[in-house]
Image (cartoon, rainbow over all chains, first blue to last red; front, side, top):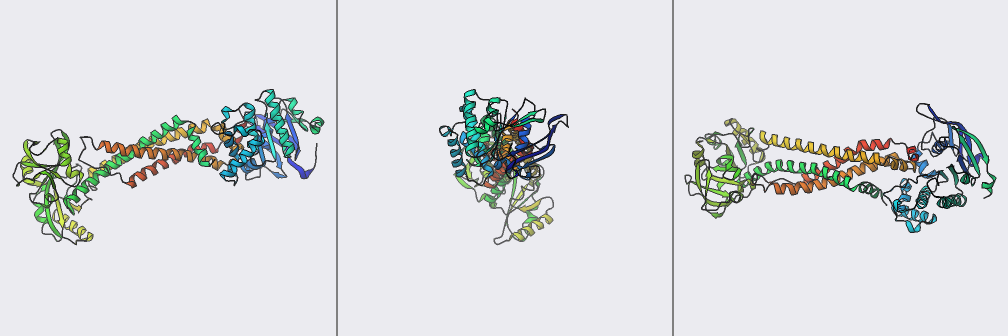
Length: 235
Length: 371
């Protein structure tokens, strides 16, 4: 596990999340640090708290207790969480969550509305991103006309629209066949390496987890194992 | 892609529902345009009628009926000597059923009075004297009654010869049966009464002097009320009732439009909950989500408003050709009314979108990960 304070992207101390007035304890006080450029896989059974942890990291929800620091500053005290979500992190969802009424090109432009880019610049950037994920021939296709793998590529391009330094992926291959899943993972890992993006990925798939340099195992809202994966680090 | 394109696409995703909502608003706005335009047209028509008769001040008693209450012809003698009065013309105006027309203006005028002078004879002639059992018909009245010079027309129990067709220069004049006052008084047995005095003032009379004249007339003739031409109908209780009813009905129609838009926008927010959460998750500010919903509802209102104005204008144009009101009024569909109708529609749109927008602003981005 890397341990340089200067490069620390996330630091969680006693992070808790409860639902229904405390009846459900999704996270029971977890502590961890994630360094810049790491590829961390979060594994664990369904309901263990993996996705809740990802939501906290992406500021999609507030912790009930504890501290979560992003590059040394508390996320809870940040006034502009939407700006954090728009610029600092990129989300890749299991169900893709593309907007069905918009083409691939338009979907990728969506996060850029919160930047000073003009319409022409947004379009240009979206074309570049879609080209980077191999979809230059599908720019004007609506999600319904794309395969699962292609939709996830669009989602990946969207997550990178504003130059995020952290990618948060929630079961990114969960809705794909094994061939598409392999291609998508290759793409995500390539982007992580080439752009030195910190990659935090929730998965059930032990094969995918083994590609990560570090594996956090979550069970019943607690991190029960935090180990380096030499095979992943060497890849 | 612009933000407006995002907004437009939001509406186009459910074209049938969007279309029906626009139709709903359009009907409400068409009601505003038609009812308010007609009620204002009522006022305009009478004002134009007076203008074409060359009237500056009208002496009448506008009660709760559409036509003024009768008063003694002796009032004319009290009005004539007042300063700034150049000419007077006594009238007995009625709104009655004439043969196949359910409602038609009968305008009987003091023989030789100035109100006769602006009538342009299209065919035939004017009556030769006050006692000739004859009428002239305005062009629209002749058309409605399907009469020409040489035919007869039944007024109450009297059968009168149509001796001329005239152009009176205003819808109410062209829609009227015009005859001499003594003849109509004889037919109706109303020998001593009139219900309007048209007053023409001396040239150079200022507005202030006209107002003073009205006060003087009111002092010498308390049974009637003098007002500057055009204002008399506005003071009519009947007109006020018509105006209030037209606005009341319009507001009800608009309320239906509000509920329609609100329902559509709420459905939109419910259906697109996950999409809205995804937009929040990828960094959209809540205020942008609120703007998106409000722009969508405002756009619905705008389209409904434009549609409503078109339907209203076409509807009113068709309505005024209906025999029951033909020749009675000309709708007042001025640009201000049409602009106000569109503005009302946009306001309705924004108002209806407030609650759905508030609902959307309370969604949590974490909901995007579910499902």
